[in-house]
Image 1 (cartoon, one colour):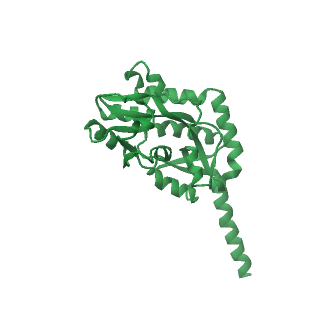
Image 2: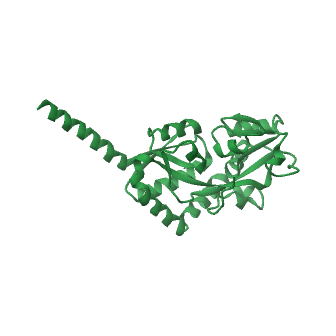
Image 3: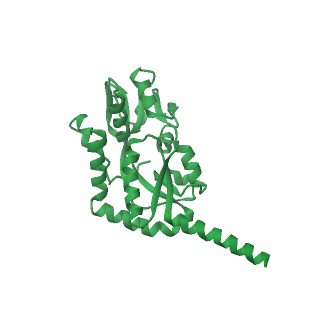
Length: 256
């Protein structure tokens, strides 16, 4: 009788855990990342249509990724596919959330040659945990810090030569930090699609959340969320005539 009661208790706890996971999902993202606000809106909206609540926690990139890959969180709010190389427990939801440009920022003067090869011999600032950028700059002389604002302070005082970052987040950081004479070098070094990821324990949700995000993409709802976000939160139109390029595209081809 004691054994049966124990089995009932164990079963009940397990059932609550599984069903609770479907009622609320928790995803990490980077603290103070301006783009995360738009992504949070997208993910909250999508899961809300499945009757699932979403909580977003703000953590450093590497720490959040490690915890989500261990199943302590339910996935990743938004990442590049490069995470699958080290964290196979994460499942890509196959809908492009947005496509961002990775660009080189300089102080006062543009780069003579805008390419990865053109960065050789320069001190290049990157943020820790940006796996795509870290992979591309492995053969370069890099300065790595946690905070993008810190990198732009170093660039503005000529302590480094270049900052490599997401165009949209970099533009927001420059505006919010009041940094002067920062040059965005075009064309972009690369374009990278960003996806939402689930932990493998939620594989049963993959088809449903994919369908909802595809509907949002087809209807133009995703593009409208980003447009509203750019106009309301970044004031990108104050940059220059090409500011619209900083609004995330939903079409790109991932380059190596």
